[in-house]
Image 1 (cartoon, rainbow, N blue to C red):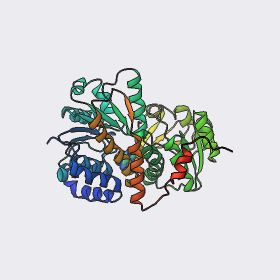
Image 2: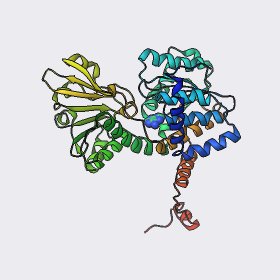
Image 3: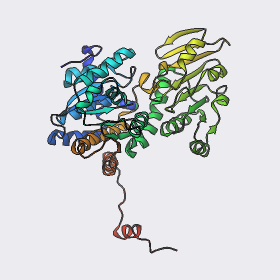
Image 4: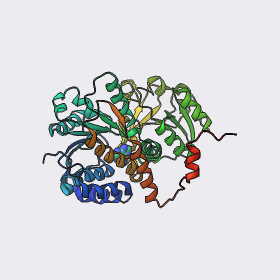
Amino acid sequence: MKFHIKDESLHKAGQSRILWAAMSMPVLESIKKRFRKEKPLQGKKIGACLHVTTETAYLMITLKEAGADVHLCASNPLSTQDDVAASLVKDYGIAVHAIKGEDNDTYYKHINAVLDAKPQFTMDDGADVVSLAHTKRKDALESIAGGTEETTTGVIRLKSMAENGILKYPIVAVNDAQTKHFFDNRYGTGQSTVDGIIRATNRLIAGSTFVVSGYGWCGRGLASRARGMGARIIVTEVDPLKALEAVMDGFEVLPIEEAAPKGDFFCTVTGDYHVIGLNHFELMKDGAIVANSGHFNVELDLEGLEKMAVTKKNIKPFVDEYKLKNGRRIYILGEGRLVNLAAAEGHPSSVMDMSFANQALALEYLIRNAQKLESKVYSVPQNIDQEIARLKLQSMNIKIDHLTQEQEKYLNSWEMGT
Ligand code: ADE
């Protein structure tokens, strides 16, 4: 088996952490049990490009139990947990190509290594595998019958490929499942982003001014968690509807230019490009802390900041100081890469449970239906979404009401009015 990881000897610590995560992933656990019996992925080769975390490990183990041959690389150069990668290789026989802190060349070598294995199905987080398979590695398209995509940014890229007639195989957009984005994007990003900022800085959130750029599911999660810790929140947005929601949720909404001089913490979660630019860095207070929790590291203009700064120095892991001509110091966390995975461990297992249950069931659905599907982006079927919500509630021992026959009849009728 070919693999490329940092250090095999880390495997024991990795396995212990994988098993700890698994304790909070009961929905995936129940799928794993069924997959072990039914082997729905028997003989299928899966090329996965995901953040190599304990939760991803449990998904990979689930796919292997279902009979798949699994090849995994990282979906971000800074998100790999090296002990987890070691355990996947040594304890579970899964081919991993990922090292935390790998440079861009190595990052792409690792994606290429996964494509070299000739996967029949891809599992992406950000669409870098699909993108490579449609550009420099078109040879890989021969074997690929379908794929899944985990994240908002990836789904946007893939929908654009489909609209432009470029996409060559069907994709199931896991992000679009309600049991994914309502929970992972909101509560997962909310908690893990605050976690990453605190682990990197150990600064007090209470009493600070915290600027959240972007009020999608991730932004609203982050704003609500940071408020819960006592910060005053300023939201910046470009979408009037989302901005209005932020106002009615009780947040101050300002253009970034007006927010820049006020913030103690800044975090982008927009999925867009250069949301915080040089003119904004120049307006910030001395000591401002700036992070990104969107998928790609383009939300902050770091290249520009690098050129504009008079000095740059590393203060401690995941904290770089940029001194500007005006004498002020700006602190960038995790090189502007997703701070929740670079400086912390990503979303908690309990929320990844639902995201990765969607991945596992979406893959099973794809394998069953690949021949019928066109080269488009599909939603996760609603029955899968509902089933995951049901199983999650069951695992939490929470019971809900059910419609009576009379209520069902009422909901399906139009006759009864005022
Ligand atoms: N994305 C965000 N958090 C994650 C985690 N814990 N594992 C995998 N992907 C993630």
